[in-house]
Length: 441
Image (cartoon, rainbow, N blue to C red; front, side, top):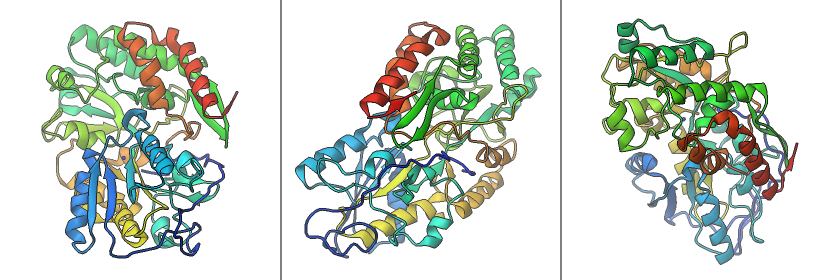
């Protein structure tokens, strides 16, 4: 869902093994291929939001046979992508040719052998994807796809967090756009007193830590090596974010309801004064008739707030990835599909809701969005935020979203203090990391 963005600068130094099953051809691209058939149908797994990408490809490439299968995209750290591929590994067949995932940590496992089978993910920078195409991605955006110096996936979009706000409502109420998190908390306290029922954010989704804690430099997910992670959720950088959210949850300005529920839309349409969140909120939440459907000329976007006295940094919420299977019997078509959906204007500029990872598409996407006159401001804050993603939050095997959903969401919904829950969060991260073979500091 941009900039030097989406960029976890620590590229995992895991041993990357490409490969395929029997009936193999030469090791042309850095992995052993299956026997190829340029006329074979390719199977593509996408989530519902990416169905438009499949349609756009079919329209532009009517001669390429494509079968689309819809799944959850591993949303909220469900791990369904990995689980299903492990089943196919055990069966020795059934792998799709191309897979979209909403997660940024899949290269960590998809680049590795599983159940004695070669790695699911094909090596992309060994000649399968042209170097010129790879070089066209925004600097840093392929870092989550890079394992042991090899690229295993293509980034769909960049998901840097920014501050969305309703300019019309803020002007009407006489509130300035908050520049710091201290200003943001003060705004929430004022709104609670003067305009109860209006909100300035949410904590009801599994990516809450990526918006608020990543943007506070909370060291909850510092991947320091192939199998090492540093976790300290009780640091001042973590407790300040938690304390701020405790205040805003308690006064009702930051509810614990997911933005993707009918309840949220019914209760808060026309009531959102501000909302920190990823670039893809533009099309998925605000300019969406099925969601908040904010009218033209009201929605503004500002830089992510800074903690007072510090440079602003931001988190990254997803920004999906496309994988080509090393088992594909039609790598030519699979590559054509993956390259199209990540770089072609027909999808990334004309249809995609989020900020493209491919640099030329990103520039055109911004131009198109600004020329629509939908927004109350320009979108340069999104562009800049892509260069402000903090590099202390990594892409390990484990999903922070899944840990948060299981450990923290129930506690928050039950009225527990986030500050009080921080040690429990740390223990949950440590336990999951150790299950996945990490040494935890």
